[in-house]
Amino acid sequence: MPARPFDLATTEIDLLAGAFAGCGSVVHLAGANEVEAERDVDRALASTLAAGRRVAAAAVLAGVETLV
Image 1 (cartoon, rainbow, N blue to C red):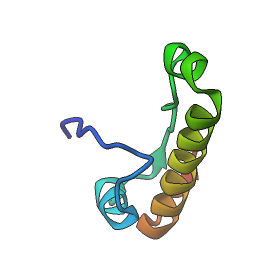
Image 2 (image 1 turned 45 degrees about the horizontal axis):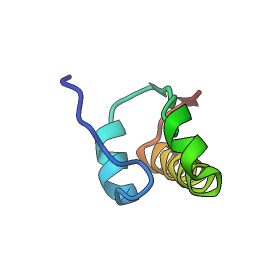
Image 3 (image 1 turned 180 degrees about the horizontal axis):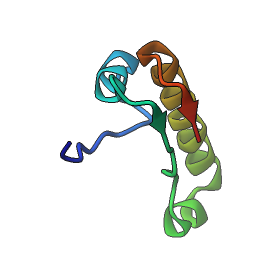
């Protein structure tokens, strides 16, 4: 399956769940890089947390068995 870029902090959960459909596992490693984080720590943290929550919710919706 080809890679599809998503802004995990803003993409609708249903769209992410569609991308996860049929996957047994999802590995979430995305987050703000050190340059972004240094510029605005609070924004980087908020974006990273939002992304993690969306990935987790989408994985549950898609029936993913393992989320790392």
